[in-house]
Image 1 (cartoon, rainbow, N blue to C red):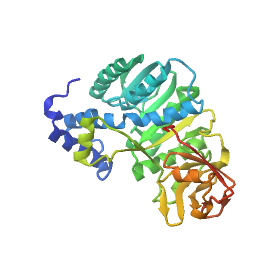
Image 2: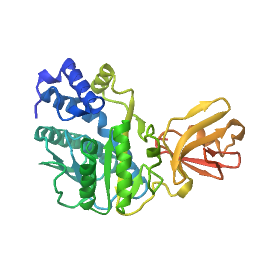
Image 3: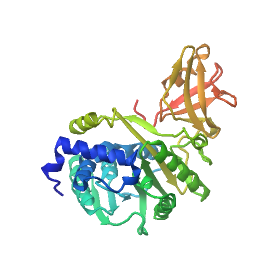
Image 4: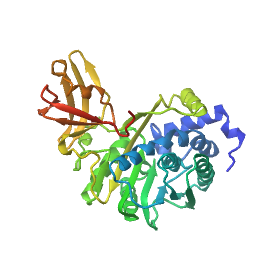
Length: 358
């Protein structure tokens, strides 16, 4: 679909991008009411789709690393609430590196957006040499789903629904995947939307589903929900294409990082890292002060600071100093207190970087 030059100019795009951002943050009552509908579609296609596409690579890489990727080839994918194709474009980039073919069904109520997705996905798949059969189906994500899939992708979908609707959509998505399939939900890294995703995590666990990622903790409740000021999100480095980077700069909406919250659900249990209660997902940036290095972790034991005092630095404990948000720290022989985990000189730390970028 051709958008036209009038909505693709920098000034028009800037206004539409900023309007969409406000509707997701301070003006959520206008979530479905953009000031300029053609401009909003242009903003989605020319900015948000490109900026958001690579988010799905993180959970896909985690599934593959743990041997939890569905075995079927080609992979059968349902992109639910596909919009202009952000999740499928990220999927295609990942598939190309794995030499895996896919059959993708994209559902969205916005037919013009699906038209953009069709052109973008088919063009990109051809350019990177991956076989992708892409089909679009106009429809509401809240409708009954049919078919059989290996993965269901949902990018910025659940936060636009009521809690009841979101849980029903997750239930429908889980219904159409096979025993070794997975549902991947990606949401904005805002406190409200992320905490809502944490609540969906807990509700899914109560129905017998299994959380694969981002948690190393299998049980409910999510510890981040205990404090209204806590939420767990990713902040990964990302190099944007020049035009997208310029739009990010002039709108001030991206600072070079890729921020998002996500949840991967499975029918069959599988650990992100096979280390039990000693595996801590890192959920903050490091906090460094004189004499100590501290970072927040979450595990089966709860959500608490992991602290290494300078006097306890050894070759076995020093790896904690290179841990960052999104990593998993496997810590043995640490000292647990009600307030924190003390990484003493008798402890050992191994860092699992997921995806491994070393």
